Image 1: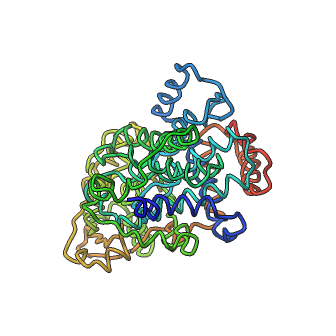
Image 2: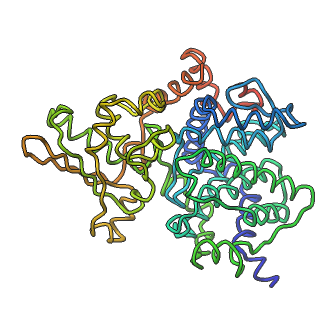
Image 3: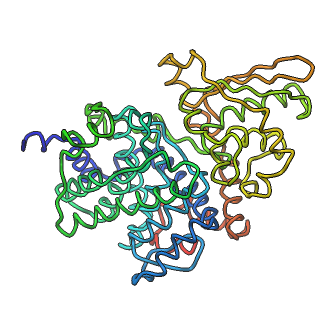
Length: 459
């Protein structure tokens, strides 16, 4: 048993993240991590305005530990690391505007960034240490995602809740400077308590689970620092994650590539340009490409038929959404808002817009199906949330288009101008003007030379 535990996936992750020197992180990988921090802080600031974020802050405000070194997005309130990770994790995912990674089909940054930021503020770390923690958190979480091959997500587990505590814990352990044994114990604790159901989609539970995953990772690291032990074989154990969540599938060989294959680069991060589930983005892009290319007016469209992978249909479950959360998981809403409002944008995620009669009428013309082409594993790997779209026009014409990935995906990243525009729009939504926003962006762009992460807040 000792030999098995010595070579378990958890102990291998622990050794790697403890032994990794900052100089071993390639510059372009650090740049990707910095971009993920900027994007996440932007959506976190906007998400802090959503009611569920206020609920999370109220929970902290009603506790005995409502002051501390760690900032809470959207307010001047401060707290300890565990509470800040929870509150900011809720805010980072409240608008579903945060990035994705297909290594695990997971919202990584919305969990890792709040956890790392909170611990970095608690220990008064500098920007370089925060950046390294973001990298190791991402690499541990996404490598675990590769090991599971997305089986758990297909089964209905919400991978951000299941895998997220691992990324959050790895980042926290790095910032706390835990040794390999403590880090392994922390990761074992994080895995042992991980959970999340896709039943959360379309409700406040989804954002709350992101916050809980961030908090769980930080708590696991702090418990290990205090001396608590964790199951080092929590991934491979007969009652462990692989067996219970993943139908026994677990490719431990991927951990051998830590530090050689960088998941932040391959498969990389998909950054959202619109604040709805990524499953709708490729179809929205196809529709808008066809409309612009052929000069089609909305009233000319009789029907919009989207042929998509089964996972897209499983995710986008609200054909006639009634709430902002449901609208974020609605293909008809995403496409109708794109056509009528040049969106969807943050300002459109309100009941008044969702209930607008012309928008709702157009939504009835949008449908989804999944034909046999998506049985091809090569195609599913190339286009996990792709779309083949038919626009059927009133005059009988049928226009067709296809996209394997949306604009903003790792293979087609947003430009620096587009990233800045998104960041400023998110901050504006959170009550911060463009001049202040650009000042904060400049501060984040110089993260490596930042001497105190605490100065990033209030944000």
